[in-house]
Length: 381
Image 1 (cartoon, rainbow, N blue to C red):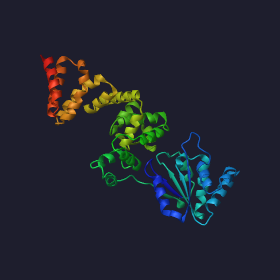
Image 2 (cartoon, rainbow, N blue to C red):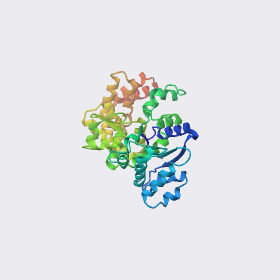
Image 3 (spheres, one colour):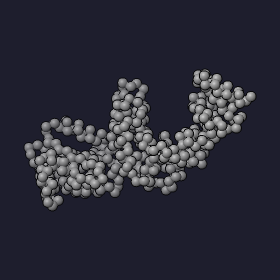
Image 4 (cartoon, helix red, strand yellow):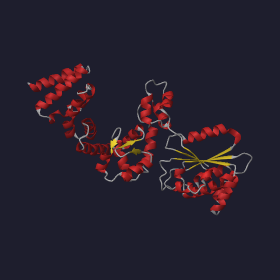
């Protein structure tokens, strides 16, 4: 019994397919799959397998469950060649299928059957029925495989035709093969539709509290301080643990972050605009209270539509950037203030325009420099 586990997109099915391709005609191959249904099909994957070996009727009308197990195991072990039976996505298995898995697993050592089980380990929590079922199978018949993400070097080989993009693709995907292939197929940093669909499906399985925390962290690029999460979700340790078990977030005592930047962007895009703005305002409140970096405060104030905070912290963020000669970034901070200058006293309004003009000159945006410089002179006069 071979257990192949890992997060979505890590390559479990591909590994099985490549193994079976190498096996060729040396073995009989049958497949079954569990589906993410509101009410799973009873014996769904093993009915698929029974169909593949020609005993579907016997399994469907086999009477007592113990009789079905016997018929199925005998059919798998028959024939001239050994059998490879694949059960995909066992994290969605129904209770009856788990009973079959336990029964077959306890007897598989005395057969010519290789049973391959794939499942998402981030969906299988400590209390998940699959974990209990596997615990009743003798450990000496189980082989565990956990495909690993692609290395940075592997991603570089895959992106040879896109010079300079390897580091960015790896940062977005952390080497997840599905995400890498989708980004390469898209040709840019836009979140592919397949990724959005996959994440949206997984989000629907989270309870309200876990989803709320995942969405809050999704609007924060990079690492999010634990204190920001605690500010709106006190006592969030168990919630973060649940989000980690479901494969969305990692965390330590100081911070919380998405395992894949592409996944963070995908979750962020699934949040309705009004709720997304509200989440940015929540983050602003926490960051202001904690005296965080002005640049981060400005980012969330701008996206959350908190103009008062934007006007207050925008000049601070610009001066901070300019102090280290980051002229483009300083200009970007001030550009966010331009539509809201009427909220400033006249002298401060002129100062912002004059500084924006000077920064525009530094980054060779001379038309903007002349325009805003002239507006500043008019106010000074």
